[in-house]
Length: 197
Length: 265
Image 1 (spheres, rainbow over the protein chains, first blue to last red):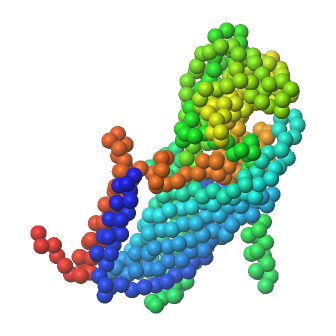
Image 2 (tube, rainbow over the protein chains, first blue to last red; image 1 turned 90 degrees about the horizontal axis):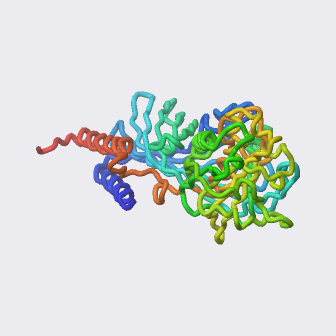
């Protein structure tokens, strides 16, 4: 596993070495969109139907470093709004950090990146009375917060409407190398570009 | 202003999730891979005789249950693996899972030495009615760690397990497996851990994924069960290697172009 850390450090060094000082341009962005989690992976009704996209707003921000006229490095941070549970005892939210690379074409850009996706699941404790066989039992609710952490690949594309506004579509691929638990989340957002600062 | 209220309402009301645990101590297996074995009694009469399938078919159903449900959770490190049919004494087929006169203190003689054991059981004292398909107890616990869990399938003559389709049997076994590693019931019908069977079950619900992820959170890329960026001799990580190579080559290529540099060799 130490090799993973070396790999990440090496990637960082390469990015710095091959980014000439005079070519760096900065563009701060703010995105608002919807995160569709684990598309097709979750049962949503008692007839076997699975999910496509449910309402799950998120915010993200990135700083784009121009390495060349076409090529950008864009570290990004984002989070979804915490979701209140049905019984208000359990909540869930997502956070992610990504190292994206963007390749710009005319009014269009391609995105590829790697990053970490965190899911926070928390509960306030207590019990819940639920059916259990032919009677009812009190089942404990979670009483702490837990973060899961996934290494993800981000593939996406975007349309540039104006200098200030664009729209992106991201595909976050979880567990890329494991067919067993591979999953896809799709994020669609509108982005405002603040420009150089 | 109305728009703001509408957005707030949607944020608060959408995406409800709820799962419970099967004990107050948040017991979990210590390992990331748990084998699920099927018990076969040494006495022929005490084997699975009334549920419509034998032990080998039950094991096959276990394989489908772990593959189709729990192992698909993207944010959990726990993997359940199909084990084997193990032959041992008749106690698992005839005994009581809980000691008489207790809320449910596990019967010491039936403590499962490791992982998960599924057995057919004909003792009426284990089931509050013929409609009860199975009972499950993590019955070998050390501190906060589950060492072994036992699932008893109702194998009485009047059981209703035998009337279920194969797909239903798969979801029933998957539901019981959820109890073995620490989950309680869910109030949501979409969830595998709902207390009753539903028309059709095809995948885990949100609650199920949240529940298993709460108990066994995946921690990539640092701990076991993570994406292996290095690969191994038998399982080289071609995807990530290709991606990393692509990024490096693309970066160098564009820098050389932009700076109008040419390699000196």
